[in-house]
Image (tube, rainbow, N blue to C red; front, side):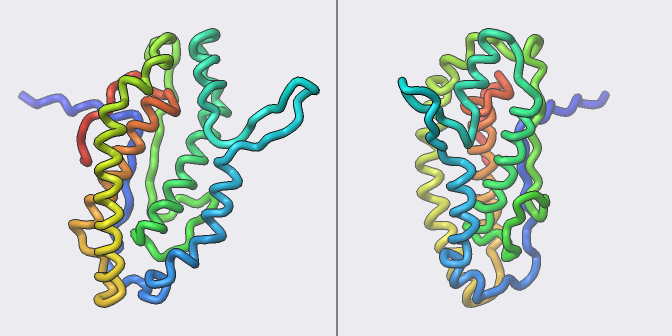
Amino acid sequence: MTTPQAVPYPARLQVDYPDRDLDRMSTALRIFYAIPIVAIVALISGPYQGEASSQGSITAGGILFFATLFMIVVRQKYPRWWFDWHLALTRFTTRVWSYLALMNDEYPSTDEEQTVHLELDYPDVQNDLNRWLPFVKWILAIPHFIVLFVLFIGSIFAIIGAWFAIVFTGRYPRGIFDFVEGVMRWGLRVEAYSILLITDRYPPFSLN
């Protein structure tokens, strides 16, 4: 008798481990090398303020959180192009963060997958999503936010340790790599649940 496999979470992340010597100079100066691509992330992800009328302004750019919440609650729809935008933006920013975390010395691409493999499942809103749950998901996710804050601090120290290891040996310690990848994966699942709103499945407390 075979045991049925667990259904994969609707947000998945895998980063290829660099089983080779990494560029020590690129690693040593990573914070400076990354400035241009981080600036692009800031421009794309941050709000854009534009005049809408004499009464106020409009905000666009980044994650369409409130627009998505409104569509799920009122229309029970998640426009496909909004989802595709979220997927593309999340993939791009994750490539940049993995570069900052020294997990690869290839400069982040704005459109190619490279070594970061990230998947989000497009939701069947009417059958899979509770139309009222988006109002409270951020509250339900507070335990995750607390744990992720602690893990994020730990990952900073882990990356600093990896920086010294790469500069002196050229190699990224596998244990540190798996930990940093796990924190990123955990954060992605919480983002998919509470911000991207693509699933009602509560994220597991797990790095795996």
